[in-house]
Image (cartoon, rainbow, N blue to C red; front, side, top):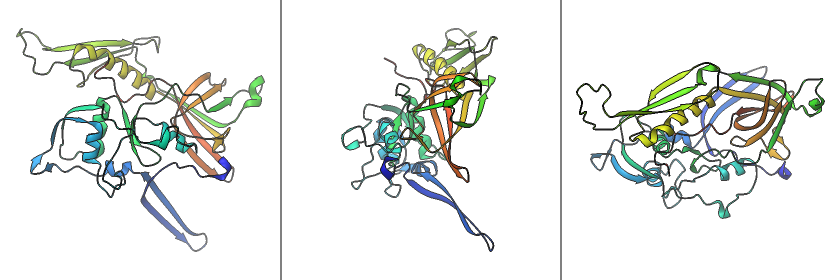
Amino acid sequence: MNGGAPALTYTGLVTERDLTSEASTGTLIRLQCADRGWHLLNNCPRFFKDGKAQLIEKSTLSQLVQRFADNPTWGFADKTGRVVVRQDDETSRRSRLGLPPSRAQAQALESDNLIVYRLIVEPGQSVADLLTSSAKRLNRLIGVGADGVLQVWNPDYAQRPLYRIDYHREDDPDTVRNNVRAVKVRESLEGLYTRVEAVGQVVSWYPQDSNDLAPGMFSAVATSSAVSFDHELTYAEAGIWQRSLAPYAAQWKLNRAAYDSFEAVYRVRGHHQNGNWWTAGTMCELHDSVNGLDGDFFVGAVTLLRSRDGDQTEVVLKRPGLLAASFDRLPN
């Protein structure tokens, strides 16, 4: 692969070390590792800053990151103390594939156009809690790239599939394409709704009618034909403060529940295919006539395995177009 050149997959730290030793077998050390996001998950921001509780009325997402993730011991800040936020997953994805950056110098792009309004630091919140909730308001996932750079992003479902998985019965002419060692498909009815109603409420609404049991409240509905009978959900969404946002919230909830209700896990030979390392966040062409699955699927996760049987990879496939951090609070 790539002429033996290494591919950068993670930048992080060892979080746990487990050592066992026996006279007959020797010493075995097991390591638990994490990317730099561990620092965000396991540190709380200071409640008081300059003698005052931290209340931020308006800020860009990059300014929030600069404020809460600039600790020089965490590795996000450069030599000048500056922390930047990349606005996509492409650079990180290409790094894990062993490919050069697609943009000149692979510069992390500033997220100055992503505005966050009114943020309050509460006791017990982690830095990750604050940044994740802020990115969610902007319909962005947040994480750490392979090179250790913070990034906010959405899945790229339009990218070309890099892999192909085939699984067919012995009497199928396409059985010669089979490349699957094992498969496990999970489908859950719980997340397949035919109707989702998102309910919001105008803040500080004073009812004109004393008999109004839902002052300032409104809702919108998203529907689906996922199952042949009615399966309905009504939920309250604090993120919708005006009627125009309710349809987006309902559709997001419908999609996210459907995303969580399905996964297909395939175990294949090797850690790469057609010159591409197996990498999460990519697309995969699937042809599984045994389980009735066909089309392009989103690679949600990969696990690299090694045993006496050789190198193998577990690939978790999810239905595309469904995963998003939230919904657009300020749609065009």
